[in-house]
Amino acid sequence: MNTQQPNTLQIGVRELSSYLLTGPDSKAVLAAAGLPLPEAVLSAEERPGALVARTGRDEYMAMLAGTLPVPQGEWCFRRYDCVFELTGGNWIAFMAHLCQYDFRQLQRGNWLMTSVAGVSCWLYHEVESGNLLIGADPSYRHYLSEIFSAVLDDLSATRKTTGGAS
Image 1 (cartoon, rainbow, N blue to C red):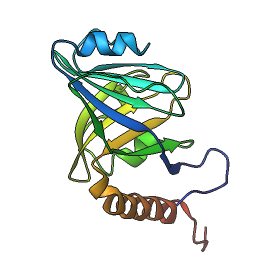
Image 2 (cartoon, one colour):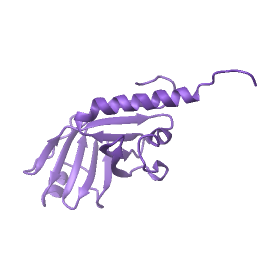
Image 3 (tube, rainbow, N blue to C red):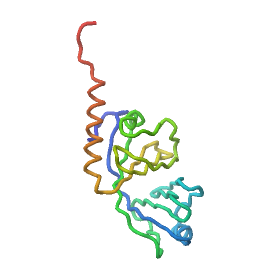
Image 4 (cartoon, helix red, strand yellow):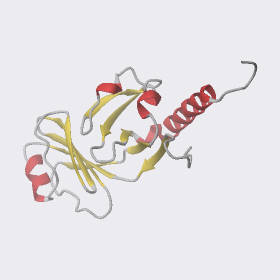
């Protein structure tokens, strides 16, 4: 699914450990782990190796890379999200084929929960890299991989010139 050409859209899978924290102690559990604390509901904050989204009044999702400490709390549950990463190229045009949301308005640092190719997903537009992360239940990994690949193929086919008379 990945290509090696610069400025070409590439789709990969990012390995992250995901956790759902809920309940009145969730904020304290995140703070104790040294993780970001987004203030507004349906917002997110990132730090190197960590992304935390606030999904409700007392509910957070934490996605951790590498060896960052796991939040420790009574209401901290492991998730197994499949996280796709869109890099390079024009992912906004790509996503227009998969989702009704107008991605031209999604700013860096924005968190979104929506349907992508009929699957409920969370999306995050990374601040520093500008990449788009798409997280979904792992049971949809194969389906989304196939859909993403088909859309990439379709977009590539429409960009190729077939020659002919001028």
